[in-house]
Amino acid sequence: MRIKFLILFVLSAFCASSQELKAVVSINSAQVTNVNPQIFKNLEKQIFDFLNNTKFSDKVVKQNEKVNCSFFFIVNKFEANNFEVTLQVNSTRPVFNSTFTTPILNINDKDVSFKYIEFENLIYDQNSFTSNLVSVLSFYANIVLASDADTFSDKGGTEYLESALNISNVAQSSGFSGWVQTGKKTTRYNLISDLMSNTFDAYRETLYQYHINGLDKMADDLKTGKLEIINSIETLLKLHKVRPNSLLARTFFDAKTDEIVNIFTGGPMLDVSKVKDNLATISPLNSSKWNKIR
Image 1 (tube, helix red, strand yellow):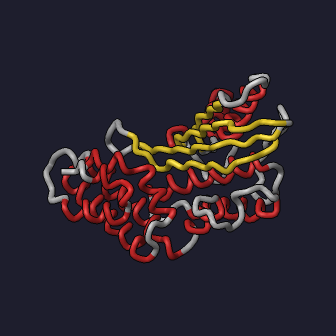
Image 2 (tube, rainbow, N blue to C red):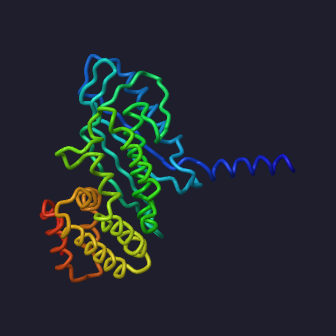
Image 3 (cartoon, rainbow, N blue to C red):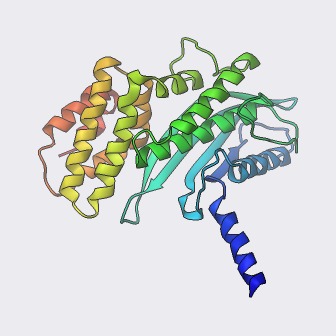
C-alpha cells in the first residue's frame, strides 16, 4: 500500500511540474535539392524535443494547461550546415465552456538563420548564447507563453516577456539578424521592445479583455460577450491613436481578423457600424473583410 502511494505521489508530481508547451513542429525543405533529407528530419525531431521537453519557467503546469502551438519552418537555403529559413509561429487556447479554440498568435519571421550540426545538444539558457537556433526557439516559446498568459490574467505573461527580453539582449552581440534595431518593423527586437513598453499596454489589455470578458463569456451570454469584444477593440483603438500601424496591432489582427468577422456575422444582431469603423481605422488592410460584417 505504501509503495502504491509513493508511486502515485511521484507520478502526480511529474504531471504537475510538466513542461509548458504542447508544440507541433514541421520543416518544409522542398526548396532545397541535392541534400540528404534525413538532416531535416533529425532537425525537426530535435526542435520538437526541445520545445516539448524544456521548462521555460518554474511555474507548475498541469497536462491540460499546456499551450498548444506550432512552429513551421520553410528552408529557403542550406549550405555547409547553415540554414536560412522562414519561421511561422502559431498558438491557440481553448474557449471557456465550449469545444472551440481561439488563435492567439500568428507570427511570420522571414529573417531566421542558424548553424546546425546534426544531433548537437539544444539546451535552454536565457542568460547565455549557445546557438541562434536555441535563441530563436527560446525567444518565441516565451512569446507564446506570455501571450497565452495575458489572455487569462491582466499582464499575466510578464515573467515570460522578461525572459524573452533577456534572450534578445544576450543574442544582440551574436551578429545574427533580427536581434538589433534596424529600419525593419517586423524584427524580434521590435516585437519584444514593444511588448515591454508601457506605450503599448493597450495591446496586452486587449488580449485580456477580448478573451476573458468576451470570448469566454459567449457560451453563457452571447450578446454580452460580443459587446465586450467591441469594447476590447476600442481599447486597441487607443493604441492606434498613439502609434498608428503599430507592429502589435498588426500582430493582433494577423491572428484575429477571420475570427472577428465570424463573431459579428451571426446573431444576436447588434449595431456593428461603430466597431466596423474602428476596425477599418486600426487595420485598413483588412477593409475587404470588415465589409463582410453585417
